[in-house]
Length: 343
Image (cartoon, rainbow, N blue to C red; front, side):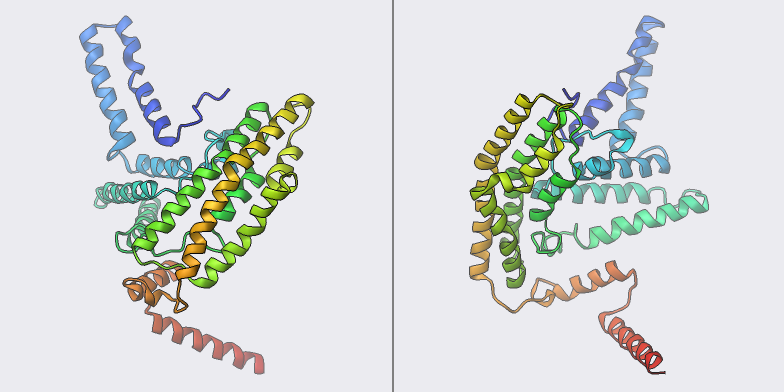
């Protein structure tokens, strides 16, 4: 049985750990004066809470907190990297909800404010470099994907790296089953595909409201990828990678044959009750979008698309060059390479 409840994310665990650390000085009640212990408890709690939730005492604490939280708020990354051999949220999937998106936006804004409070402090060359890198990272994200103006301009559901495919791939590739609790966690994760797909639907509907239209060719290729998988789940679930992978990872050291059969039957039932309907809901939304979408695609069509295009160039090239300048630079290099090849 896991020490962390299956419903918990990092937010709940962080609160529990903060409360635990704040209570550590309570042991002094039995060793020293009551009032002195109370003062120590209050001061200690202020330090813990400040470093956990507000502007930390040192820049290194800010770096550490930001890096750890970036990892701990991503159950998929935790399952892949397993720091210290731990997979703390092995029943969870990444949160694709619009509310989590807003949480990320506020968090990055807050962390950038805290970071800049150290700007004029004395730093070593390494610290200054770390400062510049983190400031650039926070800035470029807040100006683009986490800005109020462009936070839904990207196509979350897409044919190359869309979560509608990545969720299944992640569960199959990275969910380890070394003991019975891991197998139970696998079932919960598969069940939560339904919730994740509903979050993707929520994201797609939000883009509709903002006139962010997913291109026709993207929608068609996403649908072409989802339909065969849904059909296999419905008609031949035993051939689904979700089932085959699960069976391959089970063995007699984990549990008895009888228990293995029980787990497999439960997984089949979860797929029937939770996963297949989730695919149907997502496909229905995509069918609706496909029936209404036009063919004049391009960033220029999106609200303030030209500005967003420039931000994307800055993000991918790390320069402040204009689109025309980058185009001319490309032509120059192509001509140079062609001339070298002709020699």
